[in-house]
View 1: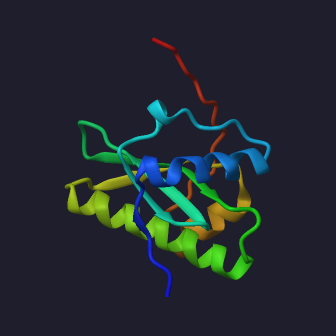
View 2: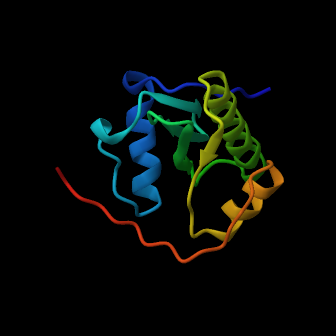
View 3: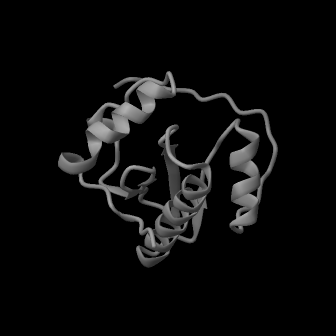
Length: 127
């Protein structure tokens, strides 16, 4: 049985960077990752961005492209559900996320999320 455990940078960060590199994605700078993450080591990870409102954000969902697809799917579900449970435990009432990947939208719906298709442009200001 696999389990989603807390993300510990010293143990898991390099693994996350390897997955991103294999997916031709930028490595997420460690200082941009939140302190609350869940990982199935070797398979998948997700993170909870906490706010000072009752909304949390689930982001940086990633999986190992070399993992067995069935194991990977189960691990992604476990990470998402672990983040949702942690958000609930912390008092958040909503968990928001965004994606342009149809498979992620279908998974989210299967896990109880409501998908509202909208055009989305990420706006960023470096401070």
